[in-house]
Length: 289
Image 1 (tube, rainbow, N blue to C red):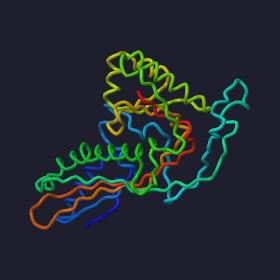
Image 2 (image 1 turned 90 degrees about the horizontal axis):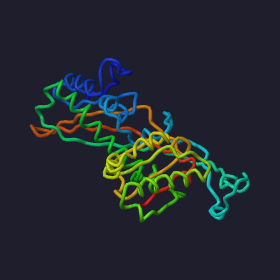
Image 3 (image 1 turned 30 degrees about the vertical axis):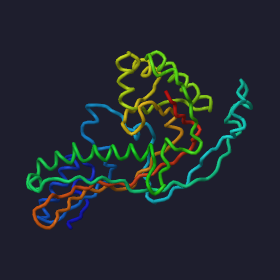
């Protein structure tokens, strides 16, 4: 296999798909791979012209050189949940307990079969990688960040130890009731001392809010909305994403094309390392509608 660091590390002149297409041409019928100094899920070309924030976009992020990172995580005293007052001593964070925790990097990847003739058309191959392979990896990343990785390195925001659960069964009908439930949920997030800055919901609920004219209110409050099929239709994740978590990226991503013996389909694999440091799990709440 031809495996090399791309000619344009800053991706100023070529996209990741073009770099892989060049490597495939150089491999002259063999397998090829390229390494990129950027998370592949940040390189989807339509993201800048068709904004649709992923779960990644909700959080601050940093690149780490080691596979393990030490950080501080704070736990709440669940026995104090009922004590809420107008003095600092009556707030939940007054008895938060800090501890040192570890975040591990894990690899996320997606493999996409492609017809053999695509390998002989560099322009078409490059466009397919940029527009169809990378977006699949974005979906995998959303799944892992919400539900966790198979190896347990990423716990998943919907399964956090300390995630609070809220219920609003009456909100399943009219859009006004749904919006009221969301605003009550945001206020509940802030009872822990943070600022609710993001929502993750299913597209079905998102478009109900669009149709009901609710998005301007969410925008005015500074709430970033992620819509993804990786969360149930009647659930919304609310949280202080910027303070509550840090997304960790490895130093490199890879794109590889492997050909089978004979004339069968080739496979393009996109992979990157990812981790998640959870500083304040209590700053997240899962709302059931």
